[in-house]
Length: 314
Ligand code: MEV
Image (cartoon, rainbow, N blue to C red):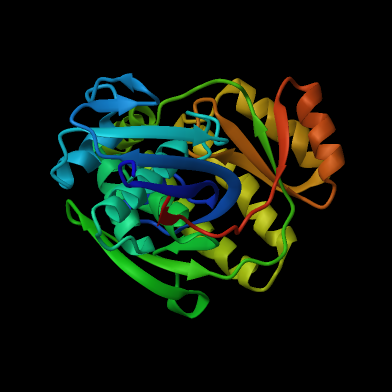
């Protein structure tokens, strides 16, 4: 008999409203999408990644979770359909799926909450700062709200770090058609989060924009709960404008958003920005895909609200 092996698959995400402002504890909403990261793990004295000896330093998400669970070595295999550094939650899906696989191998609790907490900790450690939105939606699946008005959601768990509080909840999502447009430009989250922190610290105007993005996310959640896609889309487009003013969009993202808007209820960048992807809420996915393709982006119609991470022994 070979060594025991465990596996966990976790979805990527889109953020409908509230990226960046959520880092400061403002409301936000994200949906799990049908792009997946799978991690398989088994015991090893060394750290092996996809069959090769690898550097723990160069894999901070994995090394952090290994440290937390007292592991010095491990054989890890990854398989992913979430494009990396593209705003679709690849690092959270990696952290969550790795946590689920490790926890299962060690006989520990692999509930969505425990995977989400490990994932958040790994994101925080690797990025220097983070909110729990990406890790929570990857672990829990469906729609996840952060600091959402109580009447609009089902509470899940609370996360606290450095004086900030994020109440994570599950939100019902109406039937929605979403098109993701990838600029093909890779952008790391950490530096963009740091850029917003510095801007907000030095500038009252930036601080007001962060507050405004929080109010917009709350308004969007109310529209979503009533199934009002027209108003939800308007909030998304306004959110994109505010993110642009904060300096986290780029010409390529703006081009794809502009191309999608004539055929959409609303469109915005998703994730940390600086490249990566935008998302459009639409009832004409074909027209949006054509428009994105014409402007040099790679369009995908995604299924949103899919199930969260699940782990098992192989
Ligand atoms: C990245 O997907 C979302 C950000 O708000 C960072 C975070 O919440 O950790 C930019």
